[in-house]
Image 1 (spheres, rainbow, N blue to C red):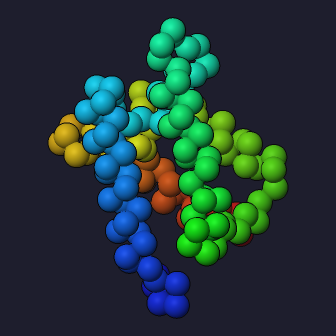
Image 2 (image 1 turned 120 degrees about the horizontal axis):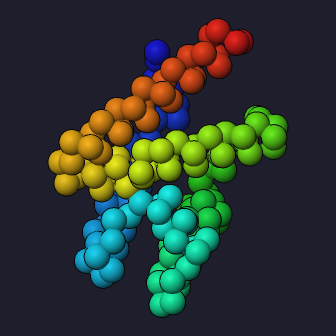
Length: 143
């Protein structure tokens, strides 16, 4: 594996990570909730009175962040070279995996690891190993 030094950008990555950490801390302090996007999104499917506005704002912020970064900072948008059907299937598989793991990468990987949760460490290791295996099979076995 080689690093693409022309596109290596540690400072924006550090800034993004810091913003994610601040958002996670802010949600924990303001709502007493873990920043687990799968759980937040699930709470919008069957909303409880008074609990949907912050969830909707958070999800809207996630959708707005990429276009906003492109507009404000000239960031390059993602290049998606897959079919819509493949993206839908991949999204459904990620959602199913999140439900099986009782949380997603943001809940376990960001918040759970920060709390030194053994369950989150196991879930994150499983997410990562599955992702590595999927990329290897897709690129090197299936072509």
